[in-house]
Amino acid sequence: MGIVASCILHKRHPIMNKTLFLTILISLLLLTACETTHLKPKNLIVASNDNVQLGLLYLQKNYLELAYQKLQLALSQNPDSVFANEALAYYFQQQNNMAMADKYYLIALKKEPNSASLLNNYGAFLCLKNEYTKGIHYLIQAQEATPENKKNIDQNIEICRALETQKAV
Image (cartoon, rainbow, N blue to C red; front, top):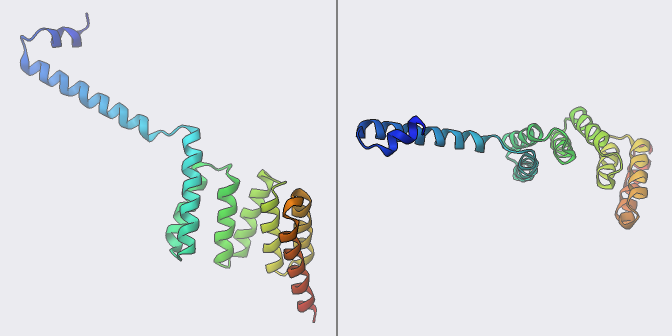
């Protein structure tokens, strides 16, 4: 029988029993606390997605610092997240930091090159940057990746071509 069990079973030393009990209780609480702070990978993915959603909500409400913090946290929780990288791209796009937006769109595209929504968003972004030919190229790729969403992407292509024509005039 171990020391812990013998001290608990023998009630000769009540102070020792209480001290030992408290020590064990505190140790268990600390171990439990340590266990809950180390999230498992699946939980990190869920946490990352939640933080992206919060970040986008804060961005929509114009709480820019909170939005940025949540999006950075999401990316640190799941660096491979296309969702987090694309959200950061959108954040920087809204801040008119086109270089950083471009960087995060490209990171997301490297991770998921056939994502129709990502190709569409990047194509629209490029059109806003006056990179019409390149933007239309990505929009056509998006169209090919998702024929069921052809109508919406067609509209983006038309808008991009109209902006190109307007710019040329």
